[in-house]
Length: 144
Image (cartoon, rainbow, N blue to C red; front, side, top):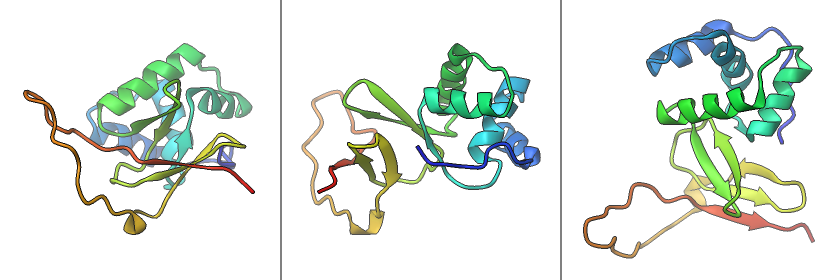
């Protein structure tokens, strides 16, 4: 996971605006999590567990269940997107632009890959009664 200095004073105005812009009520727990996620203006890739650990390191008490529920609410509100790796491990990304990801198998880190280098020429037709809502590209990497 990305290392951030999450315990320095962050811009809680940025966190409140981020939540308010999506119509989410700024509860204490949401503000705490939002401050770690976007308080410094940088994009993040986190798991629920890594975000829980970051918040705990700052001396804040938020249960892991609350972290999961809040990340789900952030995704539903369009603030974050969930990227699933291996069908079981979920990462949450604050960068909402269409872009691919590198998944580092040795460390379990998820990082942005350069979108300008990705070219998808064609997708299969969706089955009748369905439409493609998004395409997630995760490029798995192994160090040599």
